[in-house]
Amino acid sequence: MSFIELSYSRPGVKGRTVFGDLVPYGKVWRTGANSATTLTFGDDVIIGGTKIPAGKYGLLTIPGAQEWTIIITRQLDVTNPAAYKQDQDIVRITTHADELPFSLETFTILFNNVTGNSCDLELVWDRTAVAIPIKTEIDTKIMSDIDQAMNKDNRPYFAAAMYYLDNGKDLNKALEWFNKATDQNPNAFFIFYQKARCLAKLGKKQDAVAVAQKSIQLAKDAKNDDYVALNEKLIASLK
Image (cartoon, rainbow, N blue to C red):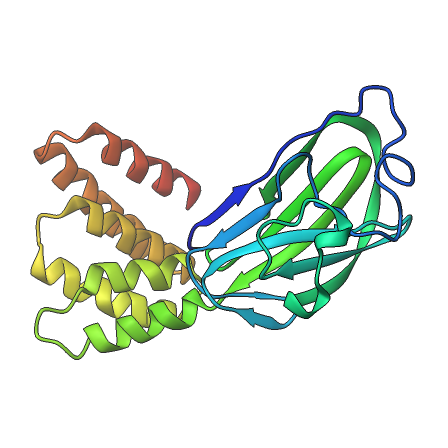
């Protein structure tokens, strides 16, 4: 997915009872210490079914023993509950709070389960972890860009085929584009390698081996040992 920029401070447990005491249940928390916590989205994202335009936003939470309320707000400077204005909310979602089998000393926000168009923003501190699913519509944008590019004279067959191959799209269409890409670049060992991968995913093992062997020969001619090794590994996996 596109970039997400995160700014937050990291308090420590320091022997204290965190949630329900240091951070009260049922009250707005700045979700860190000292300064406000902010998120900047490089592209439009979707949180809790709400589309959020690219830009910078505040991240606030209302912790609870079992569930947390997550707030994405237009406010960028909320450091205490009195400054919070609910009419500035972009979206509110409720998410389950998981109990960890260990204690994490320093409050940490991290990105997990990252894919091409989604990730989980995870808040972890002491023995509590909370996840916020974030999605983008970048796949729709890329597919549109591919469609437009394929109507031009200088068509990016290899790039389009790679996107289809690596993102679960139509493999037969990807193979068609790999064929045209190798026609354009008959000595491109790296394209033949990806074409072999595509054939393997289609279950055409014999064809995949033959194309991988061609890629090996082209890679040897180009003195590229890395692609020789990649193709040999692919061939071994098909036996």
